[in-house]
Length: 74
Image (spheres, rainbow, N blue to C red):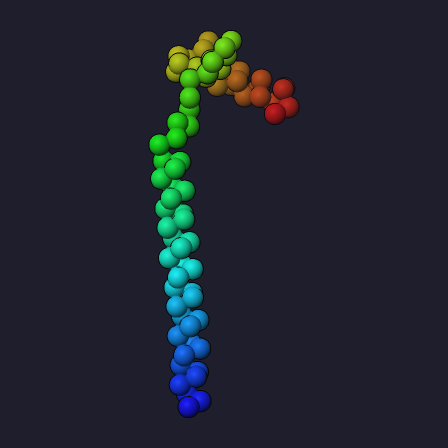
């Protein structure tokens, strides 16, 4: 009788753990689907200014850029 009660308690804990794990898994999958189609980099509106370069090299050499880096204290 004692072993049957222990088995039933163990089975309850196992079912509870499995249910919570499945619930957590599907919640994470739902959140992933919600943000998968989300546009991370939307086009700016208004008077936004583009700050990234187009890949064109500037007239500064790497040494000049290094000196500017050290002088600006960044």
